[in-house]
Image 1 (cartoon, helix red, strand yellow):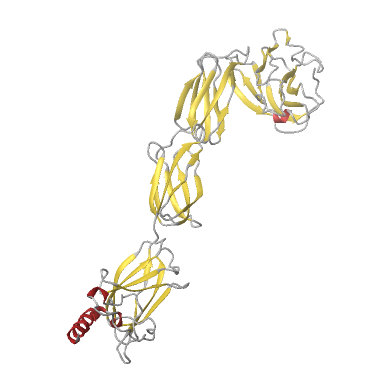
Image 2 (cartoon, one colour; image 1 turned 60 degrees about the vertical axis):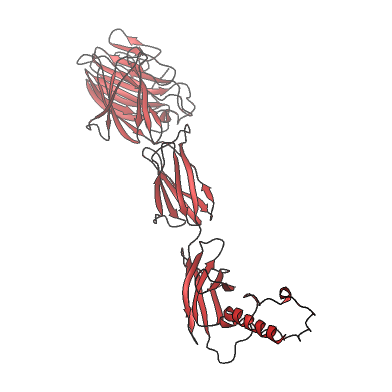
Length: 474
């Protein structure tokens, strides 16, 4: 029995080479319990096993040289303190046995006291961050070592698809720019959509972001918010509105109102003298269409052999819209002759459906102007064409000019109780003098149902341009 007891003492001493008392003190050991008498005929399997490392160690002997470890754990994104980070201490290196585990406090701090001098490896782990493992450190007698850590968030991904708001088709090559939320001047990354309109932004740190979508010929979409969470895929789609529009219209004969086929329309961008951007022609119905125009100001020239050309007609094109520009053309008239062409809006709320032309002539009383009631005075003056249902044209020609005064004016025929309607009807009057377009007039917003535009006095044109409801009408 004495030999067996000596053997057990040596075995326990050998196992004690890695006992916790060499590294860590957690709290005093419990008061020893008196030994029980051994059972008769004990076998080796009944011998108690050594205490595991996780069991609190006995208090070191007074005067033993000890050290301590402390540190601070923060986020790599904004240096904010990280609470409840698990700090694990390994003896020796990262593969060594675990000596102790503690958690950081609300300020991101941790501390481990009463460590035996030597080398250790430290792990820092928390569910939302990428762990930092096996950081080496050394403990020295009677000193406190410091080991701080900065943990990088576990990343999330962002994906989405960009389409046209009008028809849902994919838009390729859209620039997708990622900003931190509240900081649009800082760019985290930029990607582009593929041919299917898809984009993907991998490995974004968890947090809030704003996203901008920009593409040629589309209105930008900016400041879209998205939240990225660790280990998850977030989706942010976008629909862009095209800035591409166009100009369309109809060209008709000012004298008889018929459509004119084969009119050439030349388009200039920016100013009337700029190079020709596009050329189109009217079809059999007098219609034309100029597509694929970005926003801006354009100038259109209308030309056809045998007709007076109409040059530099300005059109302001807003983003993603089509603007209608109808025109009338007149065949060439002789020197000394005058032709007046009236046009006005297509249907519009508050506008006039039927705008009438009048011209008072020297050979007739002022109370009998040429108009839809008296359409001609022999071969000298004629109402060539009368239109009663939006747009026009309505045309009067002076074939044989007499001395004296001619007074030309327009009248709101069908809503005469609305004194604002004429000024809302986008009335345009073109005055031709001989083979040339002399001047184009418009009726401005104002109060009245009759607007005098000009007078021709002994062959000279005098602009009047004012509302005058005292003029005779039918």
